[in-house]
Length: 397
Image (cartoon, rainbow, N blue to C red):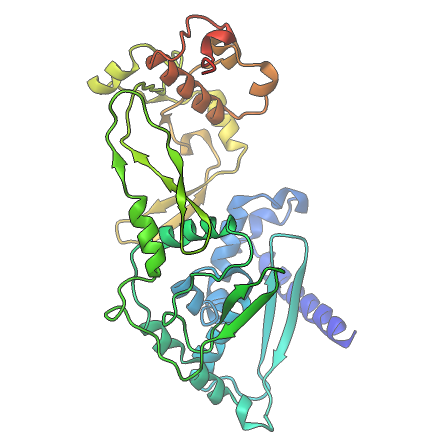
């Protein structure tokens, strides 16, 4: 309760100070002082002003803790603790995490729950938990420099292996991760027995990782062998063969393997939808218009400009010196004046699609559906002569 009262008191003090500053006609917040608070919730111009006013404070308070995330990326649940590690490394490394200092840790997800707590720096009675010891154990900069670049295909290998293991059942021993490619101290799944009991192992702390020069691939040999089998490309002569067939042999996992045949791509039909408010999206001469390089950009109507104004658009302007500016669009003259705008399209009247189904789609989805149907018509797989839905259906074969 004492913490709550202290927080409320600090908040009220801050509000009074801000109120005095904001009431000045020179304050950037002055235009919003007389507005009902409900009208400010979605005001993007106000959002931009607040970000600008708080940028210095944000950098001062959070730049150190977000340093590691900028270099590693989003780690989801681990991100808050990675931020704490970054704070200890950067601020503690400068000798500024002295007794009496505090840090707020705030963790939130995509749901309605969040956790906030405060950490206090104090004199420790155990040498194991000093700030210097934490910095030494983390060794963040050293570990970041030891990262190695791997080919994007390694992700393909890993995802294909996961899909294969999903069908394997129990018992099995994972082929990933490759021994020698994990950090010392890492825990990993060792196997699952016939009763679905999991066992885990740990890489010894005194082990060393195998670097790229010694082992260029992250994927284990069995994954590379299976990937090699799936690289077969079968030329197409006549009808396409079945894309997947069952191999009677079993792989080293003891499971019946499925070899995917990758056939050459054959384009038998094509469709092109073009912008232009003066006609339908799909015209018979669209491909010719593309080849000719016809102009598809036109002026925006007054009605469209008014609807854009209601969205409180904030434009980003990039200056020649590399800086950026944000400014709110408050009049029609400030808005874009020309654009590529889609014309008319009616899935019900042109393609016989049920009205109830069309109502579940936005305009972009409707255009995508129409493009697919037009491509089928171009390939002569459907007749598509009228709005009769039967003329747009593939034959059951």
